[in-house]
Amino acid sequence: MSAAWIAGAVRARLLVAERCLGAEGAAKLAGSPSLRDALVELGRTPYRREIGLELTLADAQRAVTSKTLIDLRLLAGWLPGDALGLLRAVAAWHELANLEDRIAYLGGAPLRQPFELGSLAAVWPRAAGTQSLDELRRVLAASAWGDPGGDTAAELGLGLRLAWARRAAAEAPEVGSLAAGASALLLARELFVVGLPVEILPLAAFPLLGPRWPGAGTFAQFVEALPPDAAWALAGIDGPEELWRAEARWWNRCEQEGRALMRSALGRQVVVGAVEVLGCDAHRVAIALEATVRRGLPGVQEVLDAAA
Image (cartoon, rainbow, N blue to C red; front, side):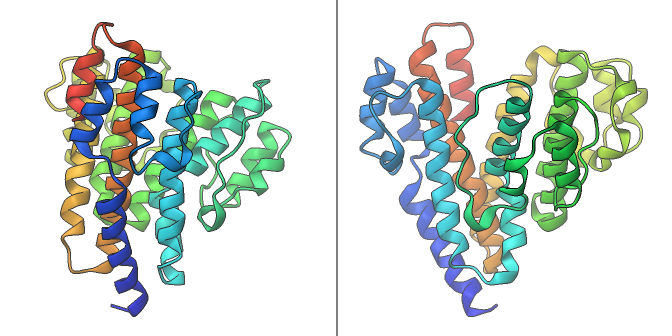
């Protein structure tokens, strides 16, 4: 292992130790009587740099994500040059958010301030200057994302999320089962909640899910048709109305596997694990903030408990 990988592994462990709020901290945050009180509390945590007391819920959640991006860019500076492709793939959610915002803008939504990706950008800012969905798709096709397929905004968005799973599994086999499980959750929601007809799906975009699922007519048949690396994410779920429970379990497994990787002696695995744990912590903090706004609504406490 090179000196750069050793330094990166040390830095990755420090980032997780010093900059994560943890389950107990998130639970305390969720107990705040209002969003403003929660933001005051968050201002005393490692997330304080991006937090302002007048933020809306959506802006506060985005600020939490921005803080994680800063951590990842810091980590990238400690890694050898040949690690950049790995980090870009497993930490691509910020670039994905920028791309989805661009798709929305091209459809008439207001222009949103993008995340500053720095060296973690695989296709941004080239994609930032595109003026049509066709142009954006061409730019993506020439990048590590590949052609997302489809002609509509919804199809491009789905293709990008599947492309992220594919990229993560290819660059980091350590997260292959998580990537397959995420693909299964995404597809289950599209088929059985959104109601997307299977006939219009780009079947070649689902390499992690095997060949049998397109013939499934029910949710149970869909789960049974998946390979084990993907089916675990939906095991024990009776129907699409319980997908939120499966998604919470996915996040829990992501954090558990991330912490297990961080105990490795290999610098690469430590870095991958740290990226997982940092992302899971930001997700849990975002849920805790939402709990302060939606307290009392059915299911809110269940979601928070499942994420703990």
